[in-house]
Length: 305
Image (tube, rainbow, N blue to C red; front, side):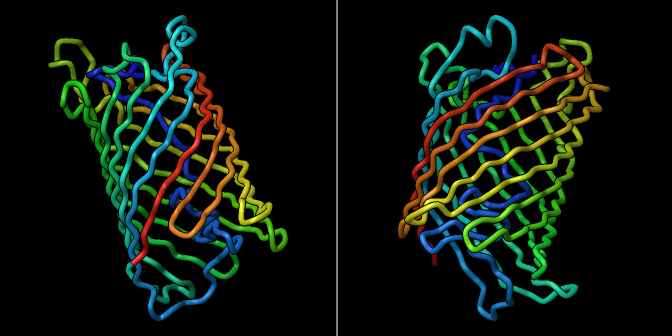
């Protein structure tokens, strides 16, 4: 089963709710940064828009289904999950393109994920992610974001690279400002995952290294509200469809539904958030069905240059 985190499959521990269209986790909706000054949005081109940021983060959460599987195993195993990470990113200026403002970006983050149950240490892993993207934004609230991402997963216990992928994707989003304290953001993303995963040495027929290749299409809706003292509440939902084409997964389709909520607060160089989200995946191969509930908190520190 691909959902079970073993040396030959992809661990599925996630610390944060999914991004609705490629924005940073500390951003509100496509450029509106959640801060103690409320919800902000870039609407005019700035001549000097080169900036860089680096920092570290720590997340701890309860996960009801840490191996993202179904059946008796899913009901029997619960675990806390800790994640320690570092990140760096840079914005490479603002440019007038197609009557909008285009901002190229590059980012890197590394994280180490550890399950609290000692018996599950085989599922602990490290991951690296590099992303090159560009935001083309309009004053009307529309935004187009092409992106190319590379990521890999390394087993912390076995020191093997169990998974890697290239992920070119395109997101389109729209922001609607409700009032000075709240907004709604809708986004649609499409992209293809070119993957490579342990093929089990070719000993199992149909189990190929590219069996997790898939075309992903998703739509999401998020609501943001500035509550008090700079605390921003977010409620979100996302519907995602994945179609697989290679090896044992050829013809498989997954439908994933995610709903959740978070509270976020920025104070100087520190960021705090708590989150609760529920995920339900239905697959044409029922062995890959799963449900999961995450609840936790994140604290991070970032320095801007």
